[in-house]
Length: 366
Image 1: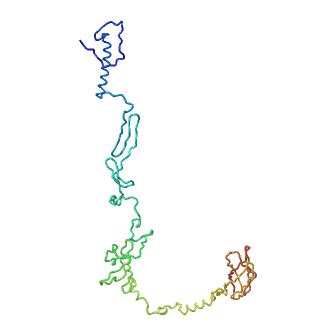
Image 2: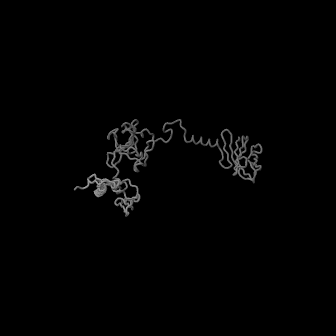
Image 3: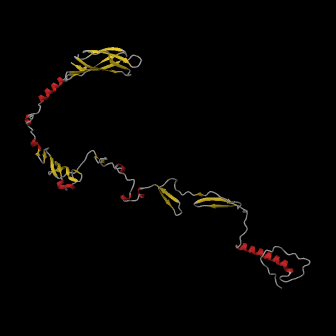
């Protein structure tokens, strides 16, 4: 006796035996057809179960979990969400604090995961040592720019300013000519300038002050005040110290004190005058200039005036009004005489009475 041969296939249906079917056994007999179809379905279902259990088959998708699950992340960040499979789920991830105080830091420490774990400000040790030639921008061009306050200042014309200057004593002839580091020399010519020679006697300071040109002493002042010239020698020997008059110096064509006194006296006579509010000045050609003032009390007034000095000829009279509001003018009312004349005041605009001063300048001949 043998078993039916089973195949793991899903039969579309189970055959129904008919009354007209003959009785026929065997592997392909109709009597075994229903058994084979059911056995095949059973083998198919068993195969599916075996594959599900063994992990070789994908299970059908579930629409929803029976119990919702809480999904949680911890560590560098915290995140959690409830998920039951019925739909997408999302939540914000909150990063854990790194321990660094919020702020801006030029220097930070980063770990292998790229997290900032520390921050600090710059210090002097953070600045690298660079050659001066590598600094191409931001370099100051003045002493103030470097914060230097104890150096002499030089202006745009290359003049050095300071309260005082000090130079080493010494003769450039003994200290290296053009290369001498003594005295006040000029440009690259180190032996042209002003130099103080050291005294050979200890504690005596300087022996003399020398003016040198290319190391040639052209002028010197000794410690006793004697002035020596390379060309003329001791200059005081050229002075006539005993002379107190022009004649003592052999000068015959100079004016004496009495001559000058006579000239001054003559000038005073030629330009005689009086400096006062009513003054005058005489000139050598006979002309005289006079100045004085008169008062006025209203805008339309006739005021008489008298010259400080009577004049034989009157060349001109010029009145000028001092009025705060500038509304009054003064004019000659008539031709002046040798002793004076009359002035009329006029108001430029209408208004209350004015009062003030009229200054008068007159030129004529005595």
